[in-house]
Image (cartoon, rainbow, N blue to C red; front, side, top):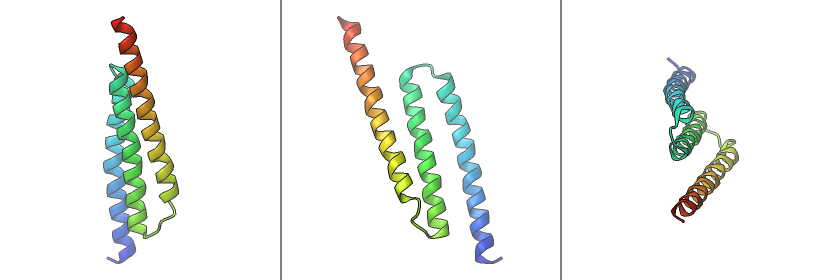
Length: 96
């Protein structure tokens, strides 16, 4: 077995594992029940995408996906902050 075969097998195993995790995460996004559950699940999904991109970059020994990974990470952070602010405002209005 040469190096390319090992890389291919490793990449397929990673993709299968993360595909199952992504499918379960999408189920959580769809079922909820609350907006916080959906927000956490979307953060998990973004993290899974980051892990797949990072694993692919490590296996194939390149850095071309780093800008994409940074953009995805920024979207995740800003999305989490936006949801947290929305929920905090909603809770404050509910207490009045």
